[in-house]
Image (tube, rainbow, N blue to C red; front, side, top):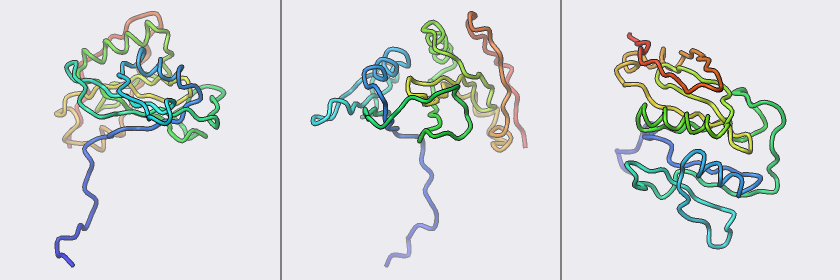
Length: 184
């Protein structure tokens, strides 16, 4: 036996991909491609209702897939409003990062123009986020990360900070870059 056995987990660098069971593959495909902006990169040969999607960096696909959708007869759409509280859904929400503040503002405006309901908008200390949901009720946190120097000296405080930001539904989002700094 080797003396170099791990004594703790090795931290991952990010979410690699997520697979969601969906009620209607075509409705979900439209949402995740046309509304959110992912690119359909393939499907399972033996099941065209199992599809794979990737994001892009500078216009280039850089991953085999970031998201997969599979149609399931067992999935039913939720009733009532989306909530960040635990629910019957297996996935509460997925956080998707846009590469820059400008790209995020573009995407948030795109969502607004497509009548996607904003459940809540938050300054999370480390991110600025808008919460929406897909046609199956899966919560999606659309975010950009604020500069690292804002939160790096006190990650705990940044994680525990959340300030709701109200924006009229018929107005483009204005984003304040006067970030709250978290120091030790």
